[in-house]
Length: 148
Image 1 (tube, rainbow, N blue to C red):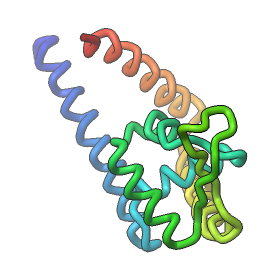
Image 2: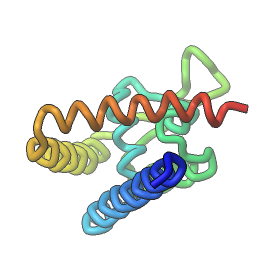
Image 3: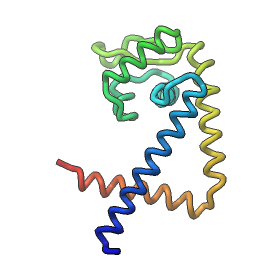
C-alpha cells in the first residue's frame, strides 16, 4: 500500500468514525425527545450561568446562526431559557437557563456526561491520551491545510 493509499484509508476511517459518533449521539438524544444540537446548546448555556450571547453559542458549537436562533426560540417557548439585556453590549441579549430549564437540562447533561465518562473508563490511559493527542494534532494540521 502506498503512502497516499494509506492516508486515504485513514481519512475514510476517520469519517466513518465521525459519522458513527454523530449517529450515536443523535440516537441517544432522540430517545430522550430532543435533538442533539439542542443538547449542545444547553451545555454551552449551562457553562455560562450568568448568560451568554447567541454568537458565543454559535462559535462554541460551530452551528449556523439560523440553527441556534431556531433552537433558542424553541427553548424559550418551552420556558427553558430567557433572554436578558446584555449590560456590556446593549445591542445584544444574554441567554440563560430558567429554573425550569435547569430542571430539564441538568439531568440530561449529567446523564450524557456519565455515559461519556463510562465510555472513557473502558479505555486505557494510553488510549485516552492517543485519542486526545491525535485529535489535537489533526485539528492543528487541518487548520494549516484548510486555511484560505
